[in-house]
Length: 278
Image (tube, rainbow, N blue to C red; front, side, top):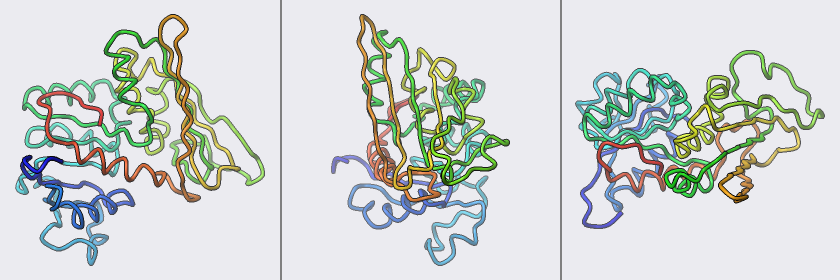
């Protein structure tokens, strides 16, 4: 962040592993980069005791406006985006750490309208998505024809709704859990497919209905998650990337995604009533 940029007050909604990382980085490195902590909220406020200075603890999320944040960062659950997203945008720029919420087309449009109405920016962090800005540029030029994303993880890393992965055995190897539109996939795995949701935002002409996603359980993936992206353009143009994101067993978020989120936060300078992939 340039030295001439005004300092930004950051509100963090959620204090899981990613929220803890962001709060720690803001407290440690933020002041030298023009970032200051405005508040931290967690559904269970007891989790904040001894970890977050008392002056930053927000007990009631409905009182967020009192803290006068420039940017509010959600890193907890899509339901918070649904319940508070438009209210956040009426006061602050808003970074959606659970962009799977945007698969709800009605909510997506409400948030976009709120950003325009209040002159705020709806930020969507790239997370584990490699080449998101390239996808967005191809989309904006009208040349994006198709987009496919496969996410493969150890079964302990998935948090799925329903009974898609209620049981698994360590020796079972690879199993395709779902293949279909990202719009269908987001409600099934709201905590696991934010990378796909970010891609669907980048590929706006295809949208959540037009981007194809696949999630794979693979018991051999004990040390990392794998994200494969296949982009198709005109006249035989195509790009395929494979990203291995180091992750411990049971981890929903790969370790490299933490730094990606931090870098996204550093460029939140406001882009005036739009959706911005960062």
